[in-house]
Length: 473
Image (cartoon, rainbow, N blue to C red):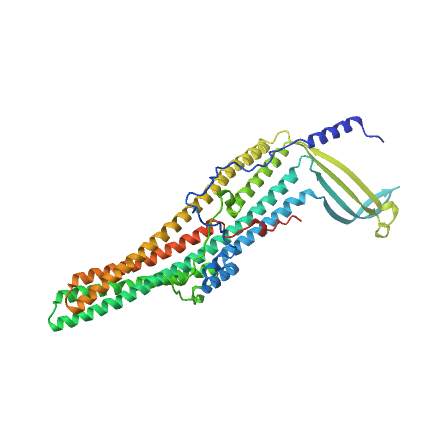
């Protein structure tokens, strides 16, 4: 039988509509990218972070802590689980592009009481059937394809988010360890100054016994010794707090942290210098995630637009049916059917329109978040570069301050021993020296913290080439 002319025209019309562009075509939002970073050095060669950038500090303790964190940190475990969830969502969304096939089988028995020529009779009927059902939604408008693409883009974004968590955890371990080292340096300075103050106290006590000074000088120096001794427990507490904080970062109990901090002065200082700001956008996983979410939103808009058009469902069934199991394989037991259905939304209370408007508003939100992510990336780099340069300058000046304070304190102690210096001058020199040395330890910590922030701001050596595509099958 030849197809009806109206059916042919309807099919041609559907195929024509199938070629309609439901758009929009994804384009990366325009952003203002400066030609150079505000604080970028002009004469330094470009040096992007390596994937294992922390090894440049030449600290075996830091290497061990970061290896432990990357293997056992719970935030990283949760991020990996979110990637698996996104992959599962991708499989679910992609299933709509394939036929749905099901196997059916049934057996039944029916008993009927009849009266024939006045005689009651019983009729028993048994039936058995087995079949295969197939259904498939023809994706004329690309709704299912767009939904699958949105899921794939979301799964890719989850991978970028996982890398962001990895960089954040790695930087947090380094910052916490360096904070412990800096506090240990400050604790060493406090203990050294306490020992010097106690030595000066013994000199003053000897002079008092010799009658060459008074009780006020002894009391003033004794008060300074007590003040410096009282600062030590606080510094010890801060060191321990940093070590305890490493426990949650490395995924182990605080009691398992057996490393003891050394000193910041023994660490190497690797150089890192960014290239042009435009290159930064390909090295930040958070920016890549924001873009992937935009791709997903774009695909969701296409799916929402496709929902305005009819959905076409093809269904088919084939199987075997017989009144006896032995007859299921006979030629007369074969049955088959094929049908097609079309569903067109007419009135749904605004549901379809609402989904489209929701998808469009979500895209507008993600565009704003993408631009914010780009701006945040540029800001992070400039802030870290500025802090790195100024903390290095401050450290140089602070070393000079320590050297001069040390010289003044040595002169004051020598004059005190010779009996030519007043105790007030000695006290001032001791206080100035301790303050300068303590400030130097803090400034040195600020330098290393700025360096870690710069590594983090530059993407921590991340590369999109290391990201596996989402699982789609």
